[in-house]
Length: 326
Ligand SMILES: NC(=O)c1ccc[n+]([C@@H]2O[C@H](COP(=O)([O-])OP(=O)(O)OC[C@H]3O[C@@H](n4cnc5c(N)ncnc54)[C@H](O)[C@@H]3O)[C@@H](O)[C@H]2O)c1
Image 1 (tube, protein in one colour):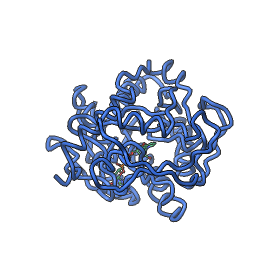
Image 2 (image 1 turned 120 degrees about the vertical axis):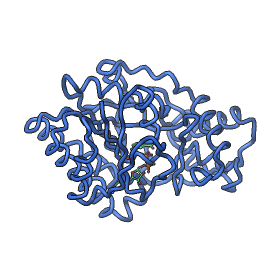
Image 3 (image 1 turned 60 degrees about the vertical axis):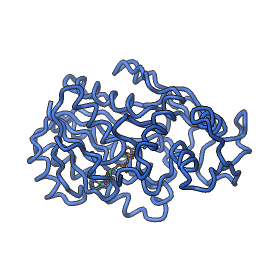
């Protein structure tokens, strides 16, 4: 299959491209490079520089790609930034998403995999969170992803576009070639590892009085390789029918304190830890019900132990101390 990967120069998109190539697919990357890195796209993959907010450029890019399928990773995804600048999030994630969907429909593309997020659930009342639970996003980022999810059924009905919307929980880890190089970095594991690299003074645990066993927030982490492979499996299944929204996590929760312990164990170093106040909008725990992923795409994450996620991220960061600028 020939797959157009939007956000192909970002963290997850670059790993998806690596895994697609390994599985024998042709790939074309699309990215505006507003946040990604051209160096994250291997030389054999054509990179179309395109801003999805521009409908004409998006249509031209989809036609130029000659793709049979789209994996749509391109987005802005910093929750606090989305609160301060909601317009930018709706323009990129919602307008960009609809531009891409229209271009896909015009181009006769029938398979579409969308990066959604656990943020569509807001602060869930029950755990683990099931796909049918209420979607009550509490910030413009989560809301923008939930809006895009709701466009798909109409495109399916009218244009025969089969779709999957993967709601990722916390993505972590790296391959030997591709890793996480966000600026600013906000994800727990790379932030902790940046302290060990000397790029940050301390790792702050936000909130120690949550109703969890050790008082710190619990999250469900999934290795980026397992996540990318779910997208590739979905591409095949979309030849038959839509899969709809699917959680991607492991149904296993780790507290922030447990992450600190694991980082120290895996790296053999001691982390300088500080304790701060709770951050508004951080639910005490988020854990995915993954039964739908098991049922529909035979989801069986094999890389997603905490030690593998931290170990691979640490190996990549040590090999690329300045990220893709090396
Ligand atoms: N990383 C996580 O833990 C996580 C969790 C849940 C959901 N997601 C979703 O996964 C996707 C990928 O996340 P990531 O961590 O790889 O992010 P990333 O920032 O590394 O990659 C996103 C890419 O999108 C590109 N982009 C942004 N705006 C664009 C535009 N208008 N036109 C074209 N390209 C544009 C950026 O340049 C960047 O390369 C996002 O949609 C994100 O919302 C990520």
